[in-house]
Amino acid sequence: MEEQEILEIQTISDDDLLTLHDRLVAHISYLKDSILDTTVPESEETSDEQQQS
Amino acid sequence: MNNNSLENLSLIKKMEIDRTHIDEFILDTDEGTKRTKEKFHRQACEKRNTYIQNQLPLYEKALSVVLDLMSKRVVSLMPIDHSNEYTAELLQVDNLLNLVKLNSDISNSFKLKFDFIISSITDNTSLQDLNSILNSFILQMQQIGISLTIKDFQYTMFTERYMNTFFQKVDFSVLKDSFEKIYFACPDIKLQLKMNLEYILGKYTKELEKYVVSLKNSELTRYQVTANDVVSRYIQVRQMVGNKIAMDEYYNTKLFLDGKKKLADYLPDSAARAKNYDMFATNGNFASLEDVEKDHYNSAMMGFYLTLNELKKYYSYEFMIQDLLERYKQKDTIKNLYLTKKKEIDKEESVREGIYKKYLKASGVGLFAKKNEVNMQDAMLKMNEQVRKLHDLYAEYKDMDITYHLMTLNESATIYDLFMTALKSFPFLEKSFSTAEPFSEHTLEENIQALFRFLYNPNNSFLRKINALVNYNVTDVVAEKYKLLNLNITSEMINIDNIDSTLESVRFINLIQNVDRSKIQFHTIENICKMSDILAKEKASEE
Image (cartoon, rainbow over all chains, first blue to last red):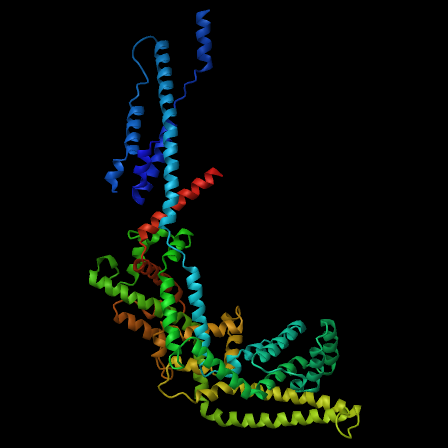
């Protein structure tokens, strides 16, 4: 996190600090929820190998 | 900063960019074979995931900065705790109340707490407790410069015998043996010791008076107050400290922070707040009142809160007023009976002394005296009978004591005057508090202290105004007063059965008024509570 960003946060009002907190929590949650599953199903890989042979 | 400036924060902008980037990330392609499409999708997902994984620590760090800042904000927002200052001021209030008592018309033995010591001897007092009570009495006498000796405990031959052992400072087992031996000859030994203590107070009346006068003068000098001004000084200091505590920002914030009061109910838009305010508005809708009407309402409610507290306490003492009024009716017949009873007691005390002298003679004490067991035994039996007789006489005399004092009241006496007269009779207070159920949870001293506090409460209004000897209904008088001040109050709302629920609503409004009159605002309290809640949850999740 940049120094400028920290300085900006330090000057905000109490109400804004609470809002910022809520938005950060929501954003972190959004980011975590946005991570997609990239594992390939096993059956699919096996069928590929069978086709190649 | 306002909400717009929040939107200008680099961090907020970053979050928005992030969201757009992630939401608009192309994860699929229409081109190629199924396998190519799947490969594209997997790679795109991995790419987006990598982006997210890189971003996450930035926001987690930002959140940690925000939480750290919040923790500092809570400390800076939290009002200062003035408890130590109040403790010192409340001690001064207590000391001034002691001075008020010292300067009042109550008896010297009451002022010096001897009455409390003696009254603590009851049928249930254990031997161990009895010994410590005797010790307290002797020490208290020493404090006022009187060193009691065995000569002071010659009320009966039994008290003398027990106290002889007592003064030898022997082990408890020796005292117990002595008590048991005496007990078989005198089952009333506890009662006789109690009466002996009362007798000692009578014997040293002048010394007690001298000590009280000297103590009162030195205390008045210490507090730099005159005897005439001591009550007003007490009331002034108590009111000042009371107001400070009621409006104390720290205490009021803590009420919400510790969950003793639900903050959401007290905030301006709350339904609970509106309901409580509407309850006392004559039109049933506080919000619709004009500003001037709201000011009148708030001012009347402040007075109503204080009066309702006074009324609630009054209800708990009302049984005393009823008793006093009944006794007042008998005052003229009691006057002569009281004085006659005193003469009778004096006569019977002389008889008791005579029995004691005969006992001494029969014991072989004195010039030419010869020991005579039969006469000794006879004197002991007579003494037990005589002390019982005296005890009954004293009981009758004490019962008339309050009625005798009531003779000083005139027709314009207020309820306050009636209570103040009650304070002059310790036996009346002792009897009242020992028979009334709600007071059994506290000691007699605590109950009497509470009565003093009630009587000298700076906010008392009707107590000092309503005539006690005219048949007024105090509930109606109070209800009428606040109806005149445009509040929706009925006698039913504040009668003994409903006063608690009404007081709950009035207390609710009073807390809002106290916060509004103080330096802190509800919105600040709300922020403190929200931040504290977030920090507590964060701490709990770390653990």
